[in-house]
Image (cartoon, rainbow, N blue to C red; front, top):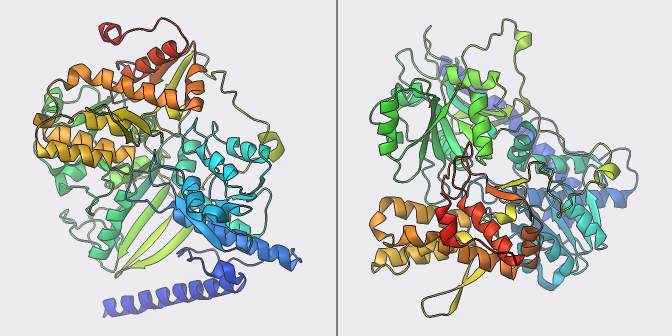
Length: 632
């Protein structure tokens, strides 16, 4: 039968692929010293051949050093991916501390935005073994602009040498940590600049892959976008009737849940909502829950749908300006955010979500929207699950609609293609666009570039801040700076961030065990984003648990927390004072109270409070909290 033949071909193909990979890995390992062999290998199922020694290198010691450096860098890249699916996407940092003998003494990775840097965790784990050791970083430090704890940790621990996989792709952070480390006398080697060989090249590639979303976002000015679809062997995503459950196996669907967990949001079109009524959840215990985005020009959508349930995760509907105003009100009554565009197209929508701080998005749309997204150049990578099934049908839909191509030579070729068997299915993935190269053309020239922190680069005298890794990211409530605030008894309690403290204060003093448990859960949250998720979710589900006077005191609560933060950290105080004469705006396009809004319509209370605090530190006549409120 045909399915027997298909099974034989599929098994043979997979056997050849895995055989090739097995011998490639064996050959790679044969080139490494024993210290490197103790490191867990990075799982790679990609085409391109094995890493082999550069024949131009005749010095065996140099080759051995390169092999050791490459192995530790690949381990750092593997560590950097450690929180994927458990926290919202963020720049991925991993750090390995290795002693003079090459033995690993400590490891660490950045868990989430606003948590301890990987370098700090690795140094803490290594302890005294950090002295005269080598630190391996998959990427130049820079998880929070304005904070230097990663560099300080390496210097104070007595690290002698730092090997960096790649420079930071964000211009305002690029080269800063490298200069700072070298100015303190540390030897800094950057892969592709100071170190070059085939082994080094392969290690550097692993660093590029683990931060591909950040690199592509920085280069394209849109979030890193992945198009995912499942299709039959004959290229159909549904039967002619539209029925599509299920094309792929349960194993493949579990893999999709993992992809969702790695994304800020999942995007579908209106047709998918009407036909499939999806939930688009990650379906794992705890961890990151991506937002849901629906793109619909006409808002011809059902009154009731799974995506309209926002009790656990939010939904955003992007539509054409003026579409079905009454239906927009219906969605708003369910807690759904509606964003209008003059022209609804993938490029405009992606630029909006870039400004909103989104790093990575997963497209699970139908062929029409997929074709529009590909044509507009916003799709960076494709994941195609191919099931060993044939459905046929002249009118059965395919994963990508009309692209206007008439010759095979016009087809898009995937780059860095990977093949993997997932249950009975074949997963084929690859990039539609190459990952941009962040190696400077002339390193010495790049090294001379430096941002003077006392001079604002904004000609308009407006400083925008939002994500911690954005310019002036330390102004964010999510920055990794612990504060100590007094409790009801006057004792000072530590809080991991301003956001932790602010969210908990919503429920403090409420005589209800659920509210009290919520305060403790927020306080013990591992990251500011988790604290915010707990606080906002409880406020949405149980508004009766929020203290009755909250709306009248929340500005004062925020101000006290900000004052503590910028009083106890001298470098943050200096950063705030250096902005004198500039207007500070939190560039949140959706928070119209604390942020500036999409078109400047927001109240920008966070920016106002920072400017008030700055005036107080400068000895000027500060505006009172009451005056700030009355300015509206």
